[in-house]
Image 1 (cartoon, rainbow, N blue to C red):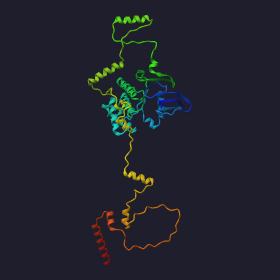
Image 2 (image 1 turned 30 degrees about the vertical axis):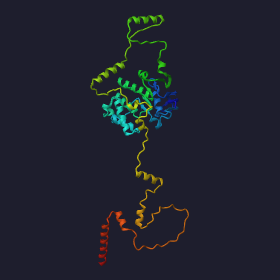
Image 3 (image 1 turned 90 degrees about the vertical axis):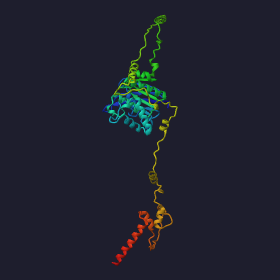
Image 4 (image 1 turned 180 degrees about the horizontal axis):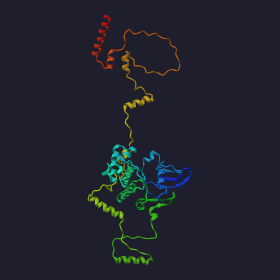
Length: 415
């Protein structure tokens, strides 16, 4: 399994009402995403990015071609249990709160209760929704809905994370948090397939990118190789005097080249985050999400170290089998030895010292037998004490009932 995601001439054609080919959403796509890399899948609206992701996950059937996800079919439950997916639009149950939403998705993945509870609390803290965990998801803003959507995509600790416009509607702090999370996941050995229109975010986190247009890949490669301008040089130094700057310019002019000396600038994102973090440290009240830089421990653990969580996830869940269900299975299988009543009790009732023989199968050969008249026993062989035990009557009570029967019988005879 050399690649985490691989497509072979993947094509999707949407037909009109008459079945005629109408739109080539994806056209002969050959895509290869390596393990443990962050791959940027870029393109303008309508270029086929979301359609490709849906075919990878088995939500759409390709017109032709094939797609492999983690070495198999993306629609296979064994494969998609290792995949985390954040769609472009978060489809959530609006009447469930944040904690119930994550619990619902954790149950779908079959996580044990203790592990599920631990991950829910860690993810709520990570995405900054712990303070509003009991609010209905339907009352969340778009950015808060994206946060809970990201948490549900990480609840199963996936090997492959597919993110379709993950930063849509998020504030700059939430955007930075997702970028830090992607970098941490890549360090842990996971694979991330990222679709986004925010090219600055893609540039910060992606190892390789592919630009799609008209359903076809127009360019792909390493971000550094595609963006680097090899015909120019850039020098960054500490603060130097104007005299030194003039000397540098003169040296550059001697090389017959142009030179421009300016002071570097911070990114607006960095300045924004620094300002908001300072306000949070002063404990200013807010009714929205509280953004943090913390990431769940179970997402940042190195893959080489086997932890208790890994053992819990890998442990097979064998339900306890009750005695009644075991007996029922034996009866269905044809073993009725344990389902028979007590043979010794039957022997006591019949007065026989030998255990009751089980019923034998019907013989194929027919044996002719002569009817034999059995003598009628003069005394009933059933023992009264055993009957008393079965009916729950005491011995004294049985003797009183016998005397009463005899008295009644005598009175009727006198009459």
